[in-house]
Image (cartoon, rainbow, N blue to C red; front, side, top):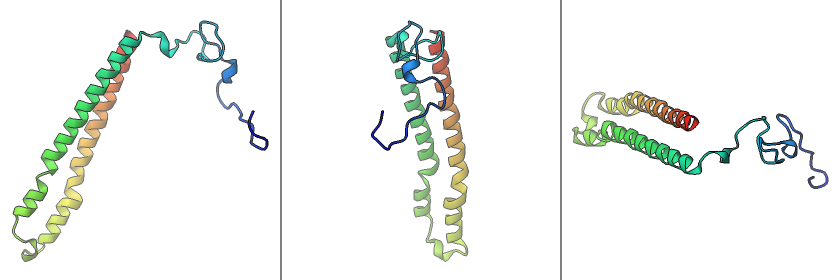
Length: 133
């Protein structure tokens, strides 16, 4: 139990840990569902390879998304530096702020959405592969 005066933990979902029985009949650390496969029951070498492959794909995807951002948005400071002083044009500063404050965000949203969809697909493909093995 806990220290005197602390509230008692209540089981809200599932069975208490002490009452759980895994598929091998051992009490305590298994899953609550009968016939469920323990996490360590699969070949650790296969799981390790799948996890490494997933990490490599996610890293490659992250670097690609970062590269797209650098290529699309990185030149903006150079473009603004190459422009003549914006204070001399009517509305010149407004154009710069409109580009920085408005036009950049659709590119960020599109690249971000593309990244999330691809990352989820990578995870789903890895999970499907792990289930088949």
